[in-house]
Image (cartoon, rainbow, N blue to C red; front, top):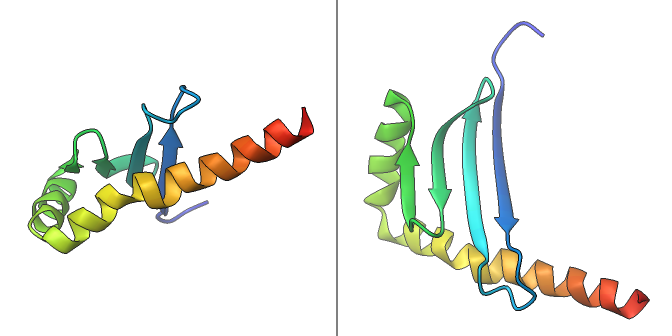
Amino acid sequence: ANGYYYSRWNKCIYSSHDFSDMVYIDNYIFNKDVYTQFNSTVGKYVGFTEYGVRNAEFWNSNTGQLQAERAEVERYCKHNAEIRQSAIADKT
């Protein structure tokens, strides 16, 4: 319990059946506080602490990394949502 805690959570959020409102969020967390976040709606990294702002500035300057994060909505979110939706629909 004593020490430091780092985690990275990414999630896909949507409410429509056609996934048109799908949002991909990638959080970088230290001791339960988000210090940097990528949000596909914003389209870039945003820093919430001094360290997070430095990370965001650095990562936003890397066009390859930004393109990869922006592509996660299609590659990761929509792909997996379609699989889950079809699995649920097949059982009803």
